[in-house]
Image 1 (cartoon, rainbow, N blue to C red):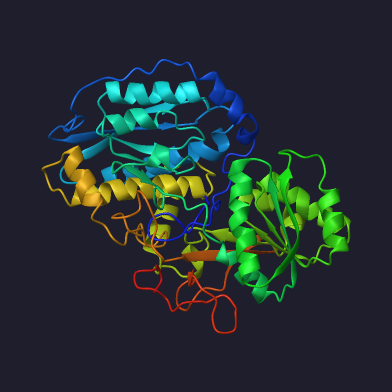
Image 2 (image 1 turned 60 degrees about the vertical axis):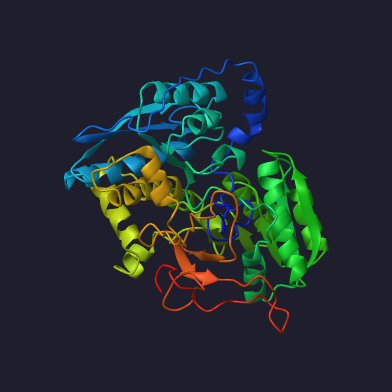
Length: 447
């Protein structure tokens, strides 16, 4: 997800989650148009105690479990499910176990998402944990009924607005913030001339505005900026030829993984395989296993603790360790770690963090109030601190992220500020006009 840094307590480079949903972007406008006349059925009841019994709390989920975006969004539910399975195995929370149902499939459809939200309200679930969809047209229904809602924020700020909506890493995306990390990686590689590539759709092109702004701010010449690439373009030869003619030695891509792989392969075909590449999408082990040659040396911006820290620094990031252990024990055999699954895990953890503070007196309003008092939530070291007192409608100045580089068949964390894998960036150039790296900020995982 990147959009990140982000939501909740920090700038989020506008797109750092960039397209977890791949091909869905090509059809989004058509599908959204098709639901324009869909009836909005809203049940009405106060609901503050919905789903709560002396021994259980019923929690629902809604995600794209089927359809063209299922591979990118279904893992959100997997992450939440394994968290609740582990929680229940240890007795639940406050004497109550979590009943995780219904789990509804929106079919990667706006109409399906509306229906799922309506059904969850009618079923009187206490909360919705595990939202994962490129549309989230049902957001207004959940907002109207003050249903605490947790999931992957891949939608508009309006859809995640309000005190009851809790996106992974925060609910607000700052699309205007410079992506300082792009300039930092360029500096570290002594780059002088850069290219910025994006699709001609908002989720991609808007994110690269921040990338280009950061490169200009730190005096890195950017002679090639193309934010009009058609999604699914058959070739990138024209862009790479321009890059070659302009002497480009650094390229930042705001395309999805498929486009990034095509870019890298085209660079190699043109004899530019050694150019430094900075991607906002592609952190996935299966993708690397299938495209090892194309991804060598690529830098990727993350908005989470890298999964690799589970073995590189066991115990330093407890949430990553716990996520990995639960994935191995409770998920189907062969399930690999992924950002969407981690988003589901963290969503469930945030929900339970709020519950634990309530004791036996559990209500929706009390849960929302408790979470919205958290000023430095990290999911036990899985993400940089989120300040939920502001994360619904804005960001603070804390901009801490992680970066990995592909080396052979592995993602290797790079940079960071000892002893943490995170790097925190200032908003202004230092005296030398370069990117300012701040001392490790309080509360950042690994500090």
